[in-house]
Image (cartoon, rainbow, N blue to C red; front, side, top):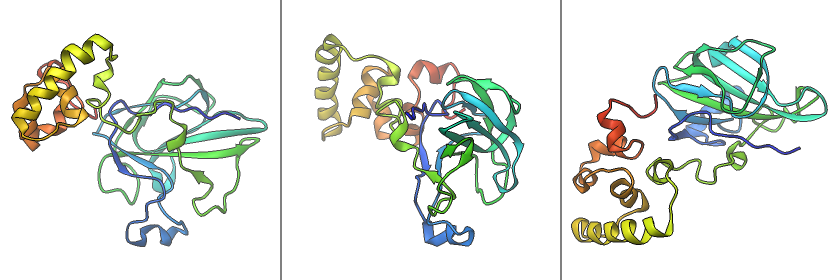
Length: 232
């Protein structure tokens, strides 16, 4: 069995990783730690299917609020993904979905959640049923190793806003920008900062204003001026 996942949201910022156990919070549910990955979202943020499969849950699901589960296989060894705290569902039980299909919008429904986010979980299955339920995470495993984008947890600026790096763009754009930023910032700039000015179209002044980092790390200047917002 091969597991390949795409990130279920467009802009990626991790609020809580798999296995984290802040102040032993998860002991009350018999868990060793957080049994998924929490993605930063805003209300109404599009949520996409992380893989192809069949919808097995679509609606209210107890403490998880409005939820969706997608099963990769109904026989033999497979896996399923879990999407919690949703605003709505755009699929129904029995639907066959492809990787990347819009399935819901994010929100803050359910218990034990302090703000908008998407809780994303992964479980191994056998004939559609969760295996290894006694692993301390109710059968969940860490989704992180299975995302197909090696930089899945990095900002859009780090990934050059989806643009491909060429030899020419590196030599004639990134290198001069890096030299100029080193002089301006009086330190070596990060990859995010270089890409912000090279591929994002932002002026160097935004790098010295922490209040603007939320925007330039996830949007190009053109996207920002067109009214687009990160995480939605």
